[in-house]
Image (cartoon, rainbow, N blue to C red):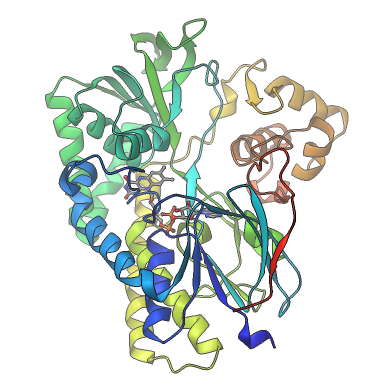
Length: 465
Ligand SMILES: Cc1cc2nc3c(=O)[nH]c(=O)nc-3n(C[C@H](O)[C@H](O)[C@H](O)COP(=O)(O)OP(=O)(O)OC[C@H]3O[C@@H](n4cnc5c(N)ncnc54)[C@H](O)[C@@H]3O)c2cc1C
């Protein structure tokens, strides 16, 4: 009796919440689970304990949207089965016989689902450089999470580095929070920002906000450098500064923390474990689950939505969550209004067009590994350097990423490649001098995130509702 099984949504961010809302409106009670303590996802992350800060103070220009999404979730709670602090770590079984493996409070639980909607979002995309594993180096997202969720800064005097809209936003948020921003080191050349002119016609608010952050930083005396390549973190045991190249000169800056990143990397491992087909997406420079416009994957009972199916931002994720829910409703035989579908699809398509332009304004540094020395650690879990990977690739005449993993151990550690797979793939591409898609896709392994030692007590198997 597969139809008696629940619909399960993984992820209570903008996509997951809006999907759940749509299902509840149609009379369905989905299970919504999230490894976080409180719903909201990444951008609208909430503190573990309320610290009295206002929405304006915590979320800035996005305060209204954050408040609306949190309120929507609170209204939904009696009508859904919400499981916070629950990690989904594996998907098994075949179509019409799928199971999700979860962990709550260290207890393993397996649930059979009729439909599974993955709204797992994204994490920071990082690349190694000398000193990046030293205490005091953070990802941009982690630095922002410290501000939003813990109400603290990760340093007193910071350098922000990388490429992507978060770079200027987080630097500005730190300045507003009272930290000293020593510099913003943009790895993209200044000329890439010309693309923002064409974005202005489509999304004036986004461009105006970006200009506002940049202008406020500069008016406050923050140095902004373009086309930067880091040489090294300065400091033996902790960050004391950074040495970098910009405009053909080597420069140094003192700081006690560095926050860096290169936009985001979609969390696609559960879709991979479910056996969904993947395709290479040039815009995100990564492999994504194949999906139709509504989020249906190649597996009939698995759907993907939001940033976990391709980076498009929070507004697109809210729309995408609704679209996926409508697809599910349609597929379980409920009536779905065609006009509503078309409106939502048009709104999402508009945002995706803006995303293309943003990608050009904040490009990924494709030549990164031309300057990073061989002794630099690439895989921090297994402590493997770029040189060791290079040697394994050359000795084994490797051209495929999973073969490289087998021979070098890169991606076999605790992070399961979530941290290092982008860099590992880029290194392989640079050695073999091939197009990104030619090196293949690092296959996901369960568990998708670390689970505690001793885990695996009695299995609580849930057949259905
Ligand atoms: C650290 C960070 C900071 C960001 N800050 C901004 C910002 O300031 N401004 C901006 O415009 N955009 C920001 N973004 C991007 C923005 O958060 C996303 O575009 C948007 O949140 C996408 O919504 P989503 O619902 O697809 O995913 P998310 O909001 O990422 O939600 C995904 C949810 O899934 C849960 N999850 C993931 N995997 C599992 C699992 N295996 N088991 C259980 N739960 C799981 C996560 O805990 C999370 O709550 C940020 C992204 C990140 C990663």
